[in-house]
Image (cartoon, rainbow, N blue to C red; front, side, top):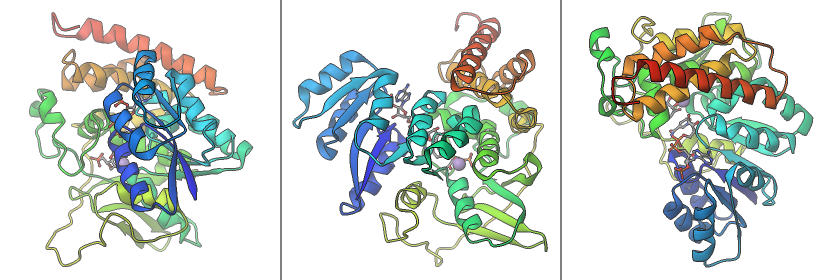
Length: 388
Ligand SMILES: NC(=O)C1=CN([C@@H]2O[C@H](COP(=O)(O)OP(=O)(O)OC[C@H]3O[C@@H](n4cnc5c(N)ncnc54)[C@H](OP(=O)(O)O)[C@@H]3O)[C@@H](O)[C@H]2O)C=CC1
Ligand SMILES: CC(=O)[C@@H](O)[C@H](O)COP(=O)(O)O
Ligand SMILES: [Mn+2]
């Protein structure tokens, strides 16, 4: 029986993970649930899955959940609660599905403790990828990707006995794939949240619209698989059925294909190396469909190019990139910034803060704080009058 600490349980990945757990009652159980502010959903999840430890962001929500539980459990709060859920619930497996750099410390601690860490929270790898690899080596556990393209690469590379020339991750292209630059520059929040192929949380959905999601994924792939930037390429594939490809020295490729349903990579990571029937039916090859492939346009989607630049600079540059992007996306979602200003803000902050070698978690979190402050200042100066 695998005992899971699920961080980010109330989100898109969190709820899909609980669907996978519910489909395998003899194989998977929940030891801890942690999330942010959605106390109603947390209480419903806790009543159904009966974890020993629960954590939410605010003390008053923790007290409310404790008063309404119908089983014995400790209800904690804040970053300490998040970490305790990872380390002190008796779980052997962490499913890291908090959004943003807020997930880094608990994920790093679980790796250091030798757990199996299934990571959806790509920002933690972008901000602290090298430190997470050190923690993995020190703890002797496992790090398994949940992000669909990286789960695909994990499957492709596990079966490969020869070195690969390059890997390619696919991108849907987002809602603005066919839009002109002028139209993209004036995109609204509702238009940017209208993802063509995946239902996900708001932050990653905006990242998909700017192609920053793919930029973060290039950095994620570099850390997960030890690849140089030039060996990681991006192909636009609007149907989101092929998730990644590996190219060999002889010029041939292998592709990974599955339905665009995150329950598949979640189950892959939780049950690895076993592959058994789960909540998603086998791929339907009788359905009529066409697959198409395109090259990304860096002029309309400059954040993909900026992510490569940060990866090549190394050290804390990806942490600066990520922090500025988190702040700019939050400001866009709140109506304080235009869509095109997201990339301008990230470019300005990345240019304005020198990268340094990343040695410790405290240091990268300090860089994260400084970069957020710089982004907040930039946003205040560039927000349309009366919004910031
Ligand atoms: N959704 C998807 O299909 C995919 C997502 N990912 C990655 O997985 C991660 C989660 O994405 P997604 O599920 O879409 O996001 P959601 O916004 O749907 O969910 C985010 C979760 O994180 C919780 N959370 C946010 N901040 C904190 C905090 N400070 N402390 C504790 N919990 C917090 C939220 O709690 P609450 O809502 O209660 O406030 C919620 O449970 C992201 O890093 C994303 O890039 C990767 C591939 C695919
Ligand atoms: C499901 C998943 O893995 C997401 O990261 C997805 O890739 C987002 O869609 P885009 O391909 O549009 O970025
Ligand atoms: Mn992805």
